[in-house]
Image (cartoon, rainbow, N blue to C red; front, top):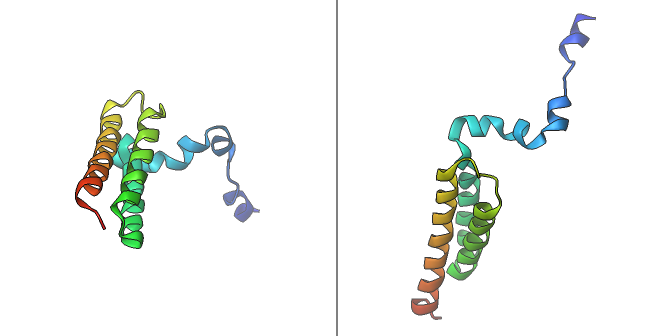
Length: 103
């Protein structure tokens, strides 16, 4: 009987606030800008797979713009600035590829 009581899990927080409950450890460790870590790893893997700066820059521009304008970080301005810089780096890589990366 005691063993079954230990296995009881209250899932109401996960149902009511799935985003906050799932990612609260990462937010507590890294702050609101934690999402830049997996996005950066995806960008690095994309570049290693394709070796094409144009594809990488488009990924960086799209994800950075969506995360900046998404309203997730309205109360935390440094995270918005970090994603904006991610977008600017993507635009710089795109211009570099257009002007100097001809094949």
